[in-house]
Amino acid sequence: MKPVIKVDGIVTRFEDRTIHDGINLHVNKNEIYAILGESGSGKSVLMKEIIMLLRPNAGNISVLGREINNISHKEAQKLRLDWGVLFQFGALYSSLTIAENIEVQLKEYTNLSKSMRDRLVRSKLSLVGLKPYVANLYPSELSGGMVKRASLARALAMDPHLLFLDEPTSGLDPIGARNFDKLIVDLRNLLGITVVMITHDLDSIFGIVDRMAVLADKHVVAEGTLKNVLQSQHPFVELFFKNEYTKERFKEKIKDV
Amino acid sequence: MNNIYFIYEEYHDYIKLISQGEWTLATVRQIEEKITKISYDKKIVWDLSNVSSFDSSGVVLFIEYYRAFQKRVEVEVVGYTPKQKEMYRLISKDLEIKTEYKKESIFEKIGKKAYEVIFDIFDFINFLGHLFLTFLNIFIHPKDFRIKEIVYHIHKSGLNALIIIGLTSFLVGMVIAYQGSVELAKFGADIFIVDTVGISITRELGPMITAIVIAGRSGSAYTAEIGAMKITEEISAMRTMGFDPYAFLVLPRVIALMVALPLLIFFSDIVGILGGMVASKMQLGISMTQFIDRLYEVLDVKEYILGMIKGPIFAFVIASIGCFRGFQVSDNTESIGLHTTSSVVNSIFLVIAFDALFSVIYTEFGL
Image 1 (cartoon, each protein chain N blue to C red):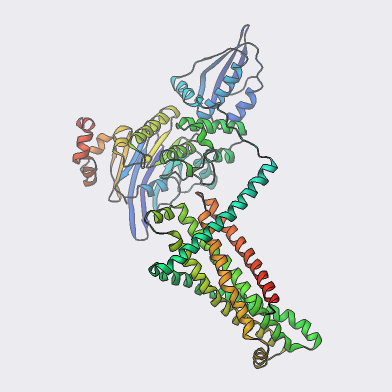
Image 2 (cartoon, chains in turn blue, red):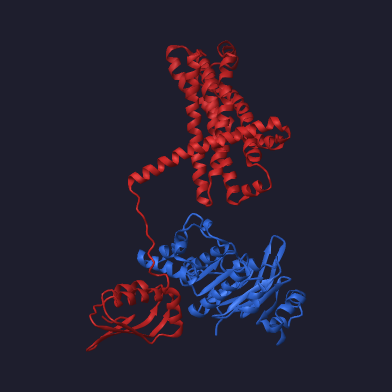
C-alpha cells in the first residue's frame, strides 16, 4: 500500500544552523503516527514543511500522492482541503464565534445551504464532545480543553483524510488528555482518517500511537512501532523511554519487548 | 428518479431506497437536491449497504432525511455497518437543538448604542480619576516617579517625530505663503505675508498640525501597545505583581507627551515660518533679511506663547485617550483595530474642539 505521507531526504537550514540533515519517514493510511524528539529537534519545523508552511532546503515530501515541492497553486489548494490542522494553542480566529470558526471553510469552499452548514457545525461539535451552547461563544470565553476540542472540530470541518495535531494533549489535565486520546482513536476508527501528531505525552505514545519517528541529532534515529523504537540504542531513546520513571510506569508494555 | 446516489424502487406496500456511491461533503449538495424530490406515502426501506464511502457530512444528510421521512411514514434502515451506526449515535445527539437568534429592533439598537456611549463617558471619567490619583501619589512617594520610562517615551514620541513634523510644517508654511501672496500682491501689500504666515503658524497651525500628527503617530501606538498587552494578559500579570498599570504605563506616556508636544510645537513654528520664508522669496521676492526684520516688528512673543500653551492640553487629550482605548481592548485581535481607530478619531476631534475653545477664550480675553 502506498504511504499517505512520504518524507525523503529533508534538509533544513536556518541561516547557518542545520535543523534537519536528511530526514526520511513515511506514514501509512489510517494509522496514528507520532513525531517525537527533544525540544529544538525540529519536530514543529518538519510538520510545518509537510503542511506547506515552510519550504525545506532540500528533499522531497509527498502527501496523499502529491509531490509538494513543485505543486501548482490549484493543486496545493485542493490538497489543503484534504487535511485539517490542530495548532498547539488552537489558533481559533478570535473575532469569530466557535460556530463561525468551524463554518468558515464550509462557507468559502462549498455551496451548501445555511441550514445544512448549521447542521454540519453542530455535528462536528457533538463529534468532539462539545455542548451545543458552545457554538455561540467566542474563543476567549472557552477553557483550554474546550479550545482544543473546538479547534479539532474546526480541523474536521471539511471531513479531511489527514489530520495534523501539534501537541494535542499539552496543557490538558490528565483525565482530559486521556479523553482526548480516546477521541482521536474514535475519530480515526470512525472516519478512517490518518493522524500525524507531535507529542511528548508518554500516555499517548504508549496508549494510542501506532508508529512513530524519533528526531534527534538532525536525523530520524528510530522509526516504527513502539517495539522497533525501544530496540534503538540512541542516547535520546535511552533517556526518554528507558529511565526509571518510564520503565516503572509502563512496565506492562515494555515487558514484552 | 434513479441517479448515481440512490435508486428508488416502488413496491406494493413499501418503497425501497437504495443509497449508493459516495455520500460525502463533496456530494451532499447534489444528493440533497435529488432526495427532496422523492414522493412517498408508504413505508420506506432504506438500504445503505451499497454506499462506497460515508463521511460525517453524509451521515448528517442521512439523519436529516431519515427524520423528515419518519414524520410521515415508517422508515426501516437496513444494511448499515457498525461504524455507520456509531457515527449516527455520535452525531445525532445534539443535531436538533435549535439555537435561537434574536433579531434586534431599530429602537433596541439605538438604545444599546446610547447606553454604550454614556457608559463610555463614565468609564473615561473613571479613568481620568484614577490617573489623577496616580499623579497625586507621586507627590507622596516621589520614588514612584518613573523618570526612565518618561525619557524613553519622550524619545520615542517626541524626538523620533521631528522629521515628519518638520516636513509637514514646512509644507503648510509654504502653502500659506503661496496662497496668501496671490491675494496680497493684488493690493501691493506684499510684505504683509510675513504677518499672515507668522501669526497663523504660531497661534493656530503649528500647534494643530503637531497635535494631529502626534495623534496619528503616538496616540494610535499607545492604544495598540496597551491593547496587545491586555490580550496577552501582561496587564493582569502586572497587577498580580503589584505594579499599577496606571503608574507604569499610563502616567509615563501622558507626562512624556505633555513635555514633548510643546517642544515639538516650538520646532514646528520655526520650520513652518521657514517654509513661509522660502515661498515668499520665490513668489514675492521678499528677501530673508526683509522677512526677519518684518517678523520682529509684527510677531509678538505673546502669539507664540498662546500657541505653546495649547501643547500640554492637546498632549493630555491624545495620551489619555490613547491609553484609555488601549485598556478597553477585549480579548480578540479585531478589537485592537477598532479601538486604535476610535482612539485616533476621538483625539483628533477633541484636539480640534479644544482648539476652538481656545479661540473663543482668547477672543473673550482680548488676547
